[in-house]
Length: 333
Ligand SMILES: Nc1nc2c(ncn2[C@@H]2O[C@H](COP(=O)(O)OP(=O)(O)OP(=O)(O)O)[C@@H](O)[C@H]2O)c(=O)[nH]1
Ligand SMILES: [Mg+2]
Image 1 (cartoon, rainbow, N blue to C red):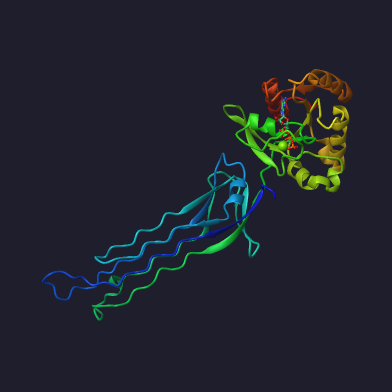
Image 2: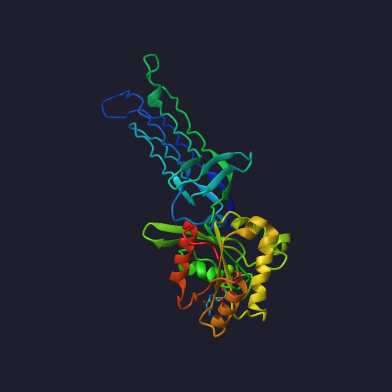
């Protein structure tokens, strides 16, 4: 399952039926028609909202049905129109009609909206049919049915920063520390099964989108561990942050792990291999942290940061470096 794709069923509400009724008042023997119109059914509207980071909530709720309009009633009372049902999606969501395959709308910016299923119009009450030749109409019309369709949603948010690394390196933990995203975290590899996105605030008016992808393993470029799918998500990211854990639980060597991820990136595409990378040793609170940082710095011939998502060490530094690199102020290392 991918968080960046979801299929949902949207059903608008039916319009309320028009009413057939005649005025009944004391001493007025033949009151005229007074049946009111039905209210309109609610529409289902998709709205791109800033701060919504994924389509995950939509994978848990497949059916979105708006309420029906109320029928009209006597004394020319119009039925109440139902409220529209608003479904919030992240900016960057493309909405497809799943059955016909065409794009309904590309909700690229926050605030954009599309009526995915229009509510049925309310029916007419018999008062509407009154004329000089027909003073006591018994006609009314039923409310129209609401539209219904199955939608396929695709999120194509372009992350500014892609987190890469072996399983268990601490990618999801870092994303959860820096953003409001709440990816699953656990002390074993392959916890993350689909990409997560989060917005990291640098200061009041600067932020960037960070993508956490499942851990990469050898052969990722050939599709092992769905590597291709995941690498696709960071293909357009401006920079990569490469996380290396200093004491892997599987006993592997941190520097060898770093090199194997580098090899996978380069084999996936030359372009991805050339992307600016910030190398980071995680879990600085573990005893081996500093030593691995020094050895990795020597191996890559450049700067390597040391962070801990547990103590918060080095996190401000890292965010600052990312922001600078995104602005192109400092050369990639
Ligand atoms: N001591 C320490 N443990 C950490 C730190 N950051 C993450 N961990 C732990 O490392 C384990 C793996 O963390 P995750 O964030 O799930 O790692 P991941 O890279 O997302 O792993 P996958 O999704 O499986 O690829 C968890 O038990 C975390 O609590 C850290 O800074 N210090
Ligand atoms: Mg993870």
